[in-house]
Length: 228
Image: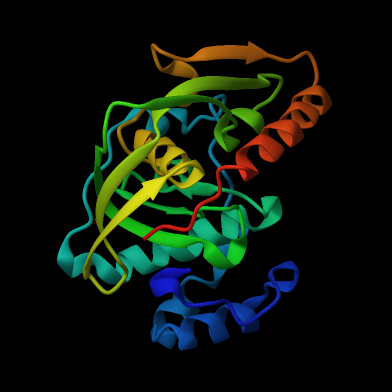
């Protein structure tokens, strides 16, 4: 969670009262919450959506005087992801906002979702691990059921801003590194199935794809490692 804080409410009953409590815990103003309560209806942009061009556009950085905007985007990301929890993450372009911000979790646990602003990373070594990846912008599209196997750096050093505008540096490995790189791609306007190094697997039904994803999640769980 932001600043490693824990959510103090149940994710399966996130309503306006829950979100308000969460924002108060994190020191976020009431006015911003009231102005954006409509965010509960946030939809994920898919590759067959009229807004799909945003998924292919490099995002703009959040400026230091835009932290209120950043908080509003983070709220929308959480609300858009809510129906699909537990989940690994979601980036701003996936809700139609071309800003450099995403949320991610090192173990798909909603309590460990963290907000990331203006991220960058460098690999630690040359070792890469291939693994299957799902993307909500693909999986929720109409009849385009695809997953991609992509080589990702096993270990990376990341830098970004938290919601207070403070600089954060961490070392990520395993699944956390994989997810961070996946979400970072979104900020570069890159969909995983469009990467040159991707092996794309097509499915005939959504059920078949989701069944395959369950096995992928089991494999991913072996590589859950808390960032340090």
